[in-house]
Amino acid sequence: MIMQEVRGRRAGVRILPAGWIFILTAILLIFAALNTGINLLFIVLGGVISFIILSSVLAVWSLHGLTMRRESPHAVQRGEPFLVEVRIGNSKWITPSLSLRVESAGSRGTMIGYVMQAPARRTITLSVTQTLSRRGVHALPPFDLATSFPFGLIEHRRRFTDNTEVVVYPKVRAVRVNLLDRLPGAAASPRTADPNGDEFFALREYLPGDDLRRIVWRISARLGVWVVRELTQHHSRDVVFLLDACVLPGMPDFEERFEDAVEWTASLAITLLKRQHNVGVVSQQYAVKPGEGTGQERRVLEMLARVEPISGDICEHLETLARRHDAGAARMICISPNPDLWGRIGASQRTAYLDPREIVHV
Image 1: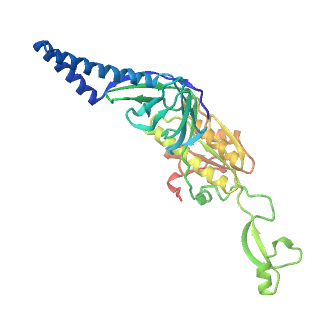
Image 2 (image 1 turned 180 degrees about the vertical axis):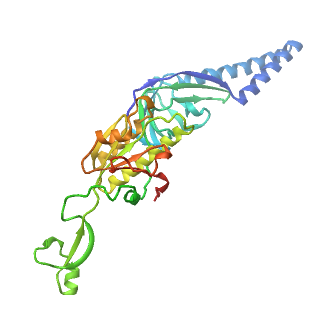
């Protein structure tokens, strides 16, 4: 996402260790010159002070006339590093800007990029790495441009702030989904009405009336008889995850458990979508209808990035939510941060609460 071009504001001045040495030298020269009256000491004192002033003036001038524009992805995953393209423009007509350090305002003193020279009336581009550790919608932290050019005595910095948001998806991990068939009520979950089925069961000899498309030609040629592939029906490929976002006041670590529940939902939903299932996700705030494909993956992650816990006074129970979003043949799987509900079966016999302790990461 491209952000607007912004001009920075002054963000402070810092005297570096070499600058303190020069200041201490200047103080000693003042006392020595006043006590002795030697003209040479006054000349040296004037040179030291001029050196300090010149260092500050040139650093301020190096930052003058600079603009910054950043380009970042629309969405990233929590805790995963991503690249931000930084474009620094120098609007001065003649003089370049030299020795610029790019720092994140949240970690002052840690350089994430460096520019040796920004020529006059030119724009330079560099890529820096950022990491956002919290799920949700966040603005990129402000960037600082700092320089102590030319003598390294005094550091000046300017801060560049914009309001462009980045969507931080929950972390998605590959998981085994066979635990869904072991959930309470899985045996009673609806099956597809397709009599042909779509999962391999066994091989057998051809019988009159069998679909010719099921013939396994290589094995038939090897055995000398017609062999067909027998298929069986499977559980419904429509799955709806019900995410419980109700706040539990008596649980001290609720926020951590809720974030875990969001990540379980994301991991299971994306894994099933990659296996050609129709997947939907519903919470008390948002609902994504069952769908498939990469577009559905983006919609599910966008929804899970924005979901937040809500007060229990206005929070709808998952059973009511399941009835309101009944998707016909779809399986309804409840995911809750409340460990008292893990492994239980819902009143409708079609909903079951996932026990995250049974989740196996690949």
